[in-house]
Length: 360
Image 1 (cartoon, one colour):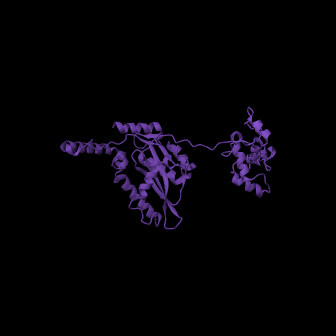
Image 2 (spheres, one colour):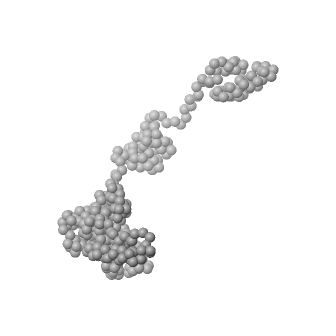
Image 3 (cartoon, helix red, strand yellow):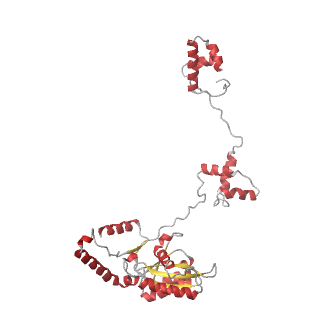
């Protein structure tokens, strides 16, 4: 304890000192000498031995940092950070810009500390970031009720140059109802393709919903005007959310993984890409046994032929089980397809689909 005169002494240290001096006194040592060894005055010991003497009632020294900002300087930091010029910027950019302007208000760490204390490390603007709501769910109970469309790149042999593949798909049957390949992405090309697809499928006004992402061709004036003329209801994904347009995403993946896609992944001319796309669409619609449709073709689903095909498969399996029951440990294979195709289902619709699967 010697040399600690100005230091606050804890209750534990005081108790230990009193105990040591008592033990020394019992052994025959004088209290005065014992206090000197511990660096204490006899009066201090006597004070500690009184009631409440173990508690140091001296207030700690209030030390104010030399470089502490005044209230005026602190307010200047907040005013600057929330000004129209800087309110949209992070502190890491504000400080350098102030230096470029010949001004020093505070260090970057001081800016952060003050803004943190004021709860302003997120958004300092008066408005909040825009939240994009999930697209409205759409159900297709038959063909030509809900379509999905998108555009994908087809690399050409000229590096950095592309052709653009346009696909329109019916989500109920998975049939490609319209396609084209162009040298540019354009709202005009999309509008022309949509008009032709509606004519080919005999779509009536107010019959169809068309879903897409937020690309410029999808939201172009020409495309939106055409949809209005055709009586088609537009639907859009949230920005940068590919899961909101899953049917088109899956279709493009199937297309680019098809064995007919160029091995080097590039097309020589736009004519080559159109010939490839035409063959792919024919295969996809008329030959491809789609797993989501319980392995019937999109054309068969689109025309309703799939019902008889799947019923026949059901009968074949039932007879096989009757003839050879020992080969079956459970029920026969399920060939039933959902009667409803849903785009962007909400939680209630997902739960409904799960329940229908369990009850089948």
